[in-house]
Length: 217
Length: 217
DNA sequence: ATATATTTTTAGCTTTGTCTAAAAATTAAA
DNA sequence: TTTAATTTTTAGACAAAGCTAAAAATATAT
Ligand SMILES: [Mn+2]
Ligand SMILES: [Mn+2]
Ligand SMILES: [Mn+2]
Ligand SMILES: [Mn+2]
Image 1 (tube, rainbow over the protein chains, first blue to last red):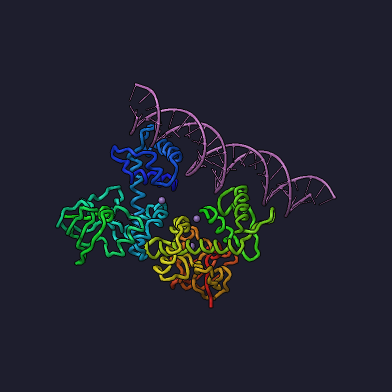
Image 2: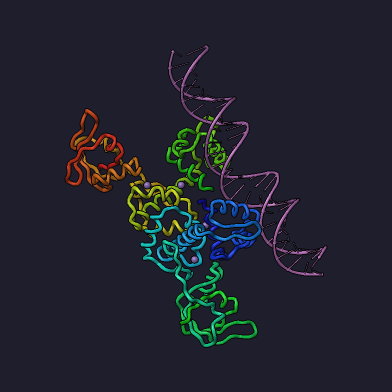
């Protein structure tokens, strides 16, 4: 498995190319910032190795083997992110790029030891679940904040967009994972939300709300 | 800088291709486990990028730029080795291969943070000095054990051969960095040494003695 | 000094992963 | 149901890093 093959499998996984779902060549190209023709080439190779199933023009999906590989990369990526934040004091908007490299380091023992060193974390710094060694994903019942009913309260448990600009925005406005959020009001005009967070009341745009996951009970 | 270019610079550095010394194509090929023709190709590329100075058939040596790069890789390699041993409980014979991968991760901040996290170590698990951020190497006055005079005492500070088999041998026979060693006797017949270590007296072969560094004061 | 051996380089080929431009298939619109 | 637009694949090229086999340069022996 090359570095590049691993990145493709991960991309297909993130685009939902698992459980009978199919992913388009163009979608992969966009996600990976490459050209569709390059994607086609790689898809054919992964198909020969039986990591994906693929019929020309019909899109691609992960085989069980491919899904296993993808989950193992995701596991490594997220464990390294936890390491960077918990042990090396990185902030959550700085870790993705580096984890993108670290996820390709090959050593089963390294990852097991890292997992132990971090005390077997269940979620990464962005609230995404860390697959177990045998590829099981903890599934949580989170909802996007913009879909939460008026007056309801939830705990902020994740972000949909984990790009640095969005994460920095959240830092700047004092919004962090674990915070308790109550929806006070919704503006019909533009969909912005008045919310209560940490005993402050602030107004956030629809775009912000639609990228924040909360868990209501 | 590609992964491979970095490995070549490091190999040249380790073979002594610095301070006016010149390194042969064959030596590099052997060190890197590649063919001489591949080395020639890479040398030409590194020469174009001015990391090495090179005249056909005359061997190769690092430029200041190349030496700086090489030392930065060595620094990363050794810091990661310390991390694996100190934080993840690896033994010293397991870390080289993994550090060989980790040394190529690109992030200045990552290495600075790691250095801090490890409390600015000066030596790696094999007793080799860790270059400072600006490429300075602590030079120590160590000697090979087989060159030490009778009755003299020294502290074991490093290994010349840091291959897993040798390191495992040392573990098995209770020889570790920091141990106090006294040369009790030398056998003319085969050069083996009777030594005192940790209040035990043991006999070691010339080959073992010639791969152990000690510091006598 | 000449012949032999060794080292180093060149020439040509392969694999991996990428690209552009053009062709083919599929999907959407008229 | 044709036509137009979009998506996907193919064809052909390229750079990186490696290889083998042969040629050239250098070093060693006789
Ligand atoms: Mn990656
Ligand atoms: Mn993450
Ligand atoms: Mn390496
Ligand atoms: Mn070492």
